Image (cartoon, rainbow, N blue to C red; front, top):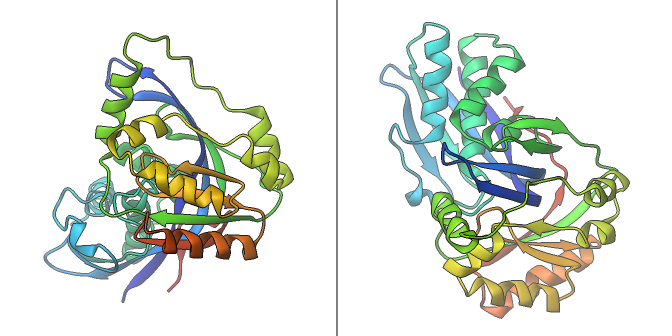
Length: 299
């Protein structure tokens, strides 16, 4: 028997970041939107698990040891239910690795759902979300998908209404960026300044609820973008190429280095993707839509 779970990537349409807390984390007002780029996690019984394998673009960059969030998710669920984590997890990657789109978090959520089904643990959703929050700030949203406002360090979620389909282009950069390194750069850039408390934009939430792409474009923000650009200045050229090609708005996705472009319709998104690919400022460009469902059992 095996269980395959599909999990979505995310884009942060607002990422408001507060000052560093004593525990090293930052308070956030993080508006997540799940997008239609997916990883698939397949769980199969294995006597020597948790064991990981991986395929797909940049699979060589994915750690296959106990540091992988998917392996940690399987072990956490097993420990709660008094089981051995005897599972082989195979990751079919399509979400950019270390790209600011929560691919590792998605794999953790997928592993949790797949192992829960494989082992018949029947963990309630509240328990799965609790494990997700222990694993990382983005993991709970990977489980639920759709759209949500994340507060605290991003793990406390409030579902949000989305009134339509949004068209996106994602430009995948060469290499990745470390999320902790981007937060350290944020702290360096804001040192000695009064960092405001993070608050969700009511105008942005209204634009999501109405399905209004132009209004959403006017309100997209990412407080980590200056830090990502400081570490990878070439991303500014990618952002400019997408805007010039007709995107309504452009921003770094999360901690980067993937960049995200909002388009008014599918045809414009296709033109923006083609222009970005031709510009030489990114490795490739992908089109998709949002919102997308959270972790979903396929088989």
